[in-house]
Image (cartoon, rainbow, N blue to C red; front, side):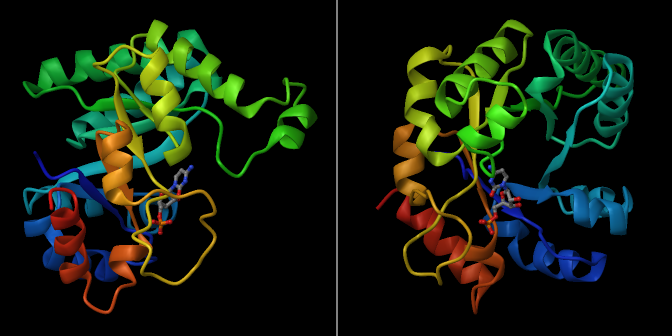
Length: 235
Ligand code: C5P
């Protein structure tokens, strides 16, 4: 089995991120860059990570008119990221524009297309939040609806919470790749993640990739923590 671990670099500076990357690149698949790090450190951080050979997941959750999202996806593709996120609630046309842009730009660059991942309902939202937006308050149904729309738009992957993996596996084509945060080993301090699975449970439920932040970067020895997680998947 290939290593499925992407480490969330939820740190504020380029220096802190690169220290983690140097330590962890040999033992994980790649690194997730979110809005905080990208806004402070800029595209240079993605180039620095790619230079180590590790993959980059650019998690900026694009949500705009199709033309603007297509251009942002093209820029991310030229940075040679391997995964990026868009909001499925931007609609069918926006998602199609994003996927087409990833395919076209990577073809021009002579590289495989990055995986454009659809984000459905943020895990910070509940039925009440959906009602406020004028949506039906059933989070599970809304996740399924947006996931099916993403597949119709041609996306090849989705971000989903641990507790959504099994249901999405039932309704989506097998080839759709599922990327899952909210992973906890059971040994770390309690934090704001409420609904979690262990790495092994998430893979067994059908996740392809695991996004893991604090259980690795806040561990006393991040490299040992990453190695132990990978080992836990097979033994
Ligand atoms: O530290 P932790 O393992 O909780 O980090 C999880 C990462 O995944 C963070 O970067 C967080 O923003 C992201 N994420 C999440 N839950 C979602 C979507 C993204 O925890 N539903």
